[in-house]
Image (cartoon, rainbow, N blue to C red; front, side, top):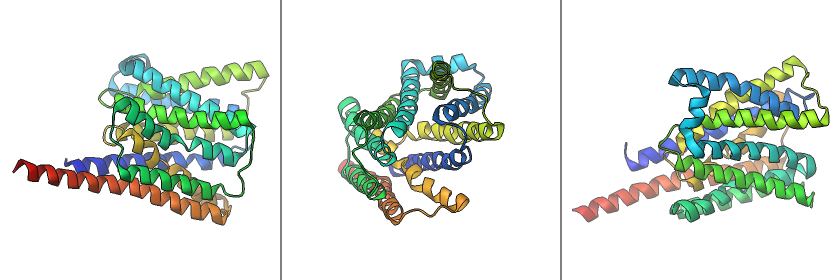
Length: 302
């Protein structure tokens, strides 16, 4: 596969990962009686059958999956667990608009960390895509931004940092089996949420239909999206990985509109369009740059 072709393939996988993630907005809306922690633990229970199925296909046990990822797999699982827990905390302690905006710093953080840790060259198209994407998110949340709670805002920024750091780990582990990340994430989330529920006296006996929706979210939308994201990390840089997966932010409101007839605000539509433009700039701009680099290299070798 050519350099341009491999990048386009990786970009497609990352876009697909965000698209799969976005369907979770449907199952969340179908579970109104589950609070955030109850939803998280049932979503993680849903991940377990997927983990076991993948392990059987690989001829491994879940423990062997965890071991095959090594420290990178464990680090990835910790990042995803922290990301999920902090996001719920942020949603509960600051405004929703602030939580979405601060957590969306992931592409910028991923690009900076990629430069500092991986020494990856961050191309102009990536920086432009990130800037356009941030502008789109500002438009989407315009009119709803508030001072919020400082700790909640910091937690939301922590979500972006954890996601950005995970993109680095995924790149570092691109040549090894990272399926154990999903296994570790499910187990750690169940343990942390279970401990919190026990301390607060929160029941796990919630409506079975809504539990099923949460488990579908975990097994299909989270699990499937994570495997696609890890595959994409083999072909695209960390700076682009989380930006391309922002299709989750774009498509989430679309599914809510189609399935629940909830009309999005004009700023949501306009901001989503701008964010989509940023994603396309990052996806296509880098691919054409790779093609030009290959042509220059070919001419230099003649």
